[in-house]
Structures are given as C-alpha cells and as structure tokens.
Image 1 (cartoon, rainbow, N blue to C red):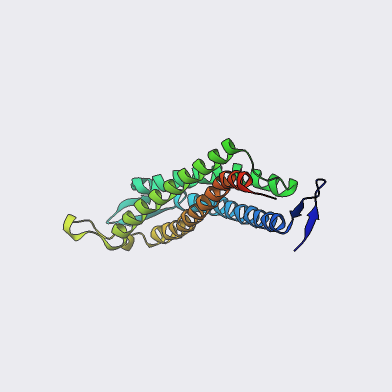
Image 2 (image 1 turned 90 degrees about the horizontal axis):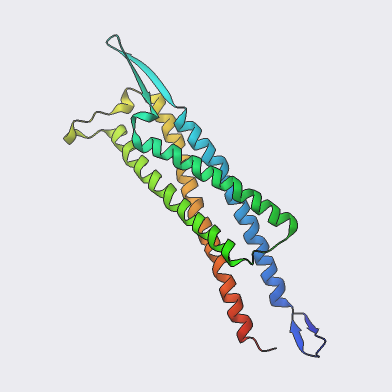
Length: 201
C-alpha cells in the first residue's frame, strides 16, 4: 500500500482512493454497455413487433394479423420506444463521462438518473408481463373463454412476436440491473460524505 505525507505532516492513505477510482471506472463501463444494449435491443424489439403482420385467406376471406390487434403488444412497442429514447440520452451522457473521466457528484442529477432508471425498469417489466400473458393465450388459447389458438393460423406473425418479446425480456433485465447501478451511484454520495465526517487522519 502507498502512503503519502500531506503538507501538515499527516500520513495520507492512497490505496483506498485508487481502489475507489477503479471501481468507479468499472461501474461507468458497465453502465455504458448496459445502456447501449438497451438502446439496440429496445429499437430491435419495437421494430420486430411494430412491423410484424401476416395475411391469411380463410374461406375466401382475407384476415390480417397485426400487433395493433392486441393492446398489450401496442404497450410493448411504446414502452420499448420510450426506453430506447431514454437510453440514447443516457448513453451520450455516459460516453462523455468516460471520455472526460468525470465522476457524478451532483446529488440532484443522481436523483434524476435514479428516478428515470426506476421508471424505465417498472415500465419494461409491466409491458413484458402483459405481452407474455397475451402471447401465452395466443399460443395455447383459452378453452374456458372459447379463445382459439391464433398462432396456428399465423405462425410467422407469432414467431416474430416471440423474437421481439425475447429482446424485450433482455431489455427489462438490463433496466433492473441499471436501476441497481444508479442506486449505488446515488447513495454512495451520501455514504461518502458520512465517511468524510467520521474519518480521522
């Protein structure tokens, strides 16, 4: 461990500071990777679901399946669009932070990021839960309510929805992890101040 001598002839410990800097850098990189992943998968999920459709001719009657037929899928597309747009803004912030080497010390900004990440996490989880429930009914039907298995008529449509839903699940997991990172970034500011008050050099 390295020790330095301050102008007041008091020993200053540099090992813990170096470790903190290393941890902060890893957290920045992890946050940046997650936000880029959310941005890419969010756009992909919205496109897969939003552009999905299939036309079938049944007894000379043309039937078209579209994501707008299920409100939960509409909600999923909107949620992924919102999360992707939010992640774009946060990704730019993270890139600037990594380039400049700056550390987040503003408590109001930390609260805004923490609150935004929490909202995105709850939004994606709610959208995925609703879409999964509707997709299960579409796949297996609901005999008690006389709902047919729509995926038997529209296999291509359902397969593409499944791909979009899988991407959305990954997005929701990433937002949950990010909410934990932003919570750490926020509450370390309070813990750091407490530690400074109680430190005796």
